[in-house]
Image 1 (cartoon, rainbow over the protein chains, first blue to last red):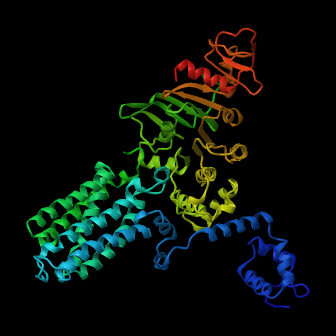
Image 2 (cartoon, rainbow over the protein chains, first blue to last red; image 1 turned 180 degrees about the horizontal axis):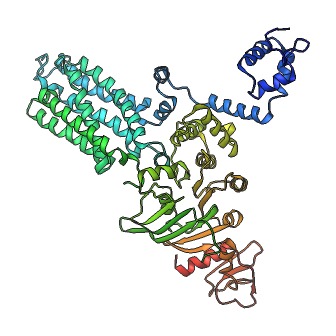
Image 3 (cartoon, chains in turn orange, yellow; image 1 turned 45 degrees about the horizontal axis):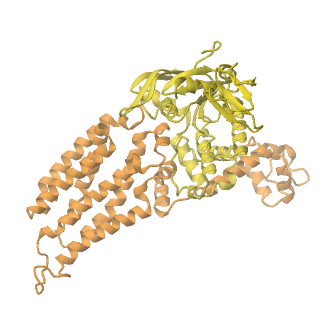
Amino acid sequence: MTSALPGPAGPAAGHASDDLLASYATGTAGPVAVWSVEAHLTGCPRCRSALSAHVAAERLARNRSVLLVRVALPEGGRVQRALRRCGVPDHLLRLLAATPSLRRSWLLSVIGVVAVAAGEAAAVGYGWIRTGGPTVLVRYPGPEVLAPFLLVAPLLVLAGVAAAFLPMFDPAYRLAVAAPFSGFTLLLVRSVSALAVALVPVVLAAFLLPGPGWLPAALLLPSLALCAFALAAATVVGPRAAAIMAGALWAVPVLLLAAAHIPLLAVQRNAQFACAAVLCACAVVLLARHDRFEWGWAR
Amino acid sequence: MTHGVRTVAVRADGLSRWYGTTRALEEADLALERGVTGLLGPNGAGKTTLLSILATVNEPDRGRVSVFGLDPRDVAERVEIRRRLGYLPQELGYHRHFTVAGFLDYVAILKEITDRRRRAEEVARVLAALGLERRARTRIRALSGGLRQRLGIAQALLGQPDLLILDEPTAGLDPEQRLRFRELLSDLPGDPVIVLSTHQADDIAAICPHVVVLLQGTVHFTGTPAELAATAAGRVWAAGERDARAHLSWRGGDNRWRHIGDHPPPGAELVAPTVEDGYLLLSHAAGA
C-alpha cells in the first residue's frame, strides 16, 4: 500500500505489521518509523483499528482524563493569549486569575472612580459647569481643580497593588502560604500586573484633563514609588499597615498642598526626585528582605 | 501513654501559642510516625492551631517543630517542608469564580507543578480519586458544601505529599463519602504521614492506628484507639434508667441508658468501652 513503511517491520500485504504498530503505540519506534506509520494511518482504517489493540486501556483512560481537564481549564482573555505568545510562562499567567484587582468588577470600579474625579476636574476646567457665581463661566480656573484627581489617581494604583498582596483579598491565602511556590515571586507577578492594569485608566484620564501636558507622565513615578513603599514596608510592619502607611504618605501632603492651592507641587520636579529616591530605597529593601514574603513562620 | 518503638517523622516539643489573652496551645508535645494519626478534641482545644503550626502557616510563641528532620524556622527548610506537604485548612477559602479544574490547576502551580502536561495529569488524578471528574467545569460557587469539602481534600492530595494534614476532612461529607474517604486514605501510596482532626470518634476507630487527644491546648493522650478505649474499661455501664451520679449518660437506639462513671447504677451491666467512651472520660477528667 505504501512504501514509506520501513523494511523488516514494514508492510505485510500493504499494512503495518503488528510489531511496528506495537512499537509505535509504546513510543519505542524510531522517528522515521513514526513518520511512516502516521502517514500510513491517515489513509488506512484497518491499521487504525489494529493500532487500538496495542494501546493500554489504562493509558487511554488517563489521556482522556487529561484531555478533559485541559478542556475544562479557561484559556484566558486576549491579553493573556498575547502575553503567552510573547513568552510569558503559562503557569505565571494562571496565577493572575486569583488576583482580585485584575477582575472586571475591580477594573470597572477603578474606571468609575477615575471618571468621577477626572470628570469633575474636566467639567470645571473646560467650563462645562459654572463656578464662582450663576453668570460666570470659568475656563481652567487654576491648578486646584486637579486636586481631587491628583489625590485619587496614585491611591487607586496603590489600592490595586494592595489588593494583589493583602491576605484579606485572597480567600485561598492559607494554601498559598503552605505551598512551596515562592511568595515573593507570587507577590511580584500579581503586583506588577495590577500596577500595569491600574495605570492605564489613570494615565488615559490624565491626558484628557485641562492640566499641564506633562501630567500623565508625572503620575507614573509617584504611583510606582507608593507601591514599592507598600511592598517594602510590608516586610517590616505587615501588609495591611504597610498599605495604610503608603496611602497616608501620599494623601497627607497632597491634601496639605491642595489646601494651599498648589496641588501640582505634589507631582512637580522636586517631588519626582523624592519619589525616585523612595523607589530606589524600597527596591534595595525588597531585595534585602524578600524572604520575609515566604510567609507563615516568619511573621 | 506511649507504645512500642517507632520512627518519628514529625515532632513538636513544648508548643505554646496565644491569641491575645486567649491560650490556644500550652506546652503541647507531639510525635507522629508514618500512617494515619487522628487528633481528637472538643472545639477550642487547639487542634486547628496545632495543625496550622505543623503546616508552617502559623508560628508558635514557644516550642520547636521538626518535620522529616527539617526545621521550619529556616526559610529554605520551611520551603522544603512545604514541597512535601498537603494541607486542608479547617476553613478553606475558595476563589468562587474558579472552576473545579481551574482551582486544582492553580493549587498545583502553587505546589510547583509548572509543567502543563504533568499538571493536567495530576489534576485528573485527584479529580478521579475524589469522584469529581464530572464537576471539572463547574464553578466553585455552584458546588454544595460536601462537594467543596471533597475539592478541598483533592487539592491536598496534589503532588502526592509525604505529609498530609487534614483539618476536619469529613465535616460536611455524607456517610457514603466518609466511607470513600476512609478507603482513599487507606489506598494512598508511599506510606505518608497523615494527621487528621475530627470530632467523629468512629472515624478514628476505623482508620487511625494512632490517636492523640488534645484538651485545653495540651496533649492528654497518645496511643492506639484500643488503648484509648481501654482507659474507660470498667467504667461504662448499660442500664434501664438514668443515673444522676454518672459523669455522662445518654439513651441509645436500644432504649437503654449508657452511663460513663465510677459508680454502677442499680441493675446495670458492665459493657465494653469504645473509643468515644475513652475520649469522653478523658474530657470529663480534664474539665474540658
